[in-house]
Amino acid sequence: MAIMREIELGGLPAGWETWRCTAGSCPQQLLQLARRSPGEDLWLICERPGWLMAASVPACPGCGTSLRRES
Image (cartoon, rainbow, N blue to C red):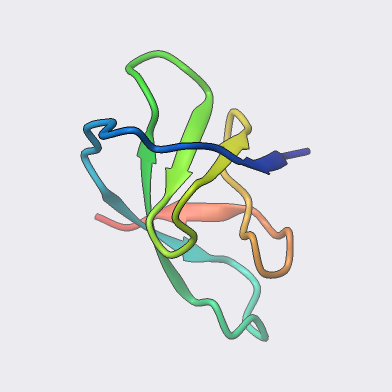
């Protein structure tokens, strides 16, 4: 389960990674995510500025399905 909420980014540095939604019918497809800080299960979502997702494995903000990191 992922919990998402809006936050102030306040210049947080981010190393964006590409993740893919595993649901074939989801229009979201690819997302850029970054951990808020190393070791935390908190993710920033590039496509949704100001959002913070709390999850060990990120979920798609569009449909809630698990995401898979692209190589």
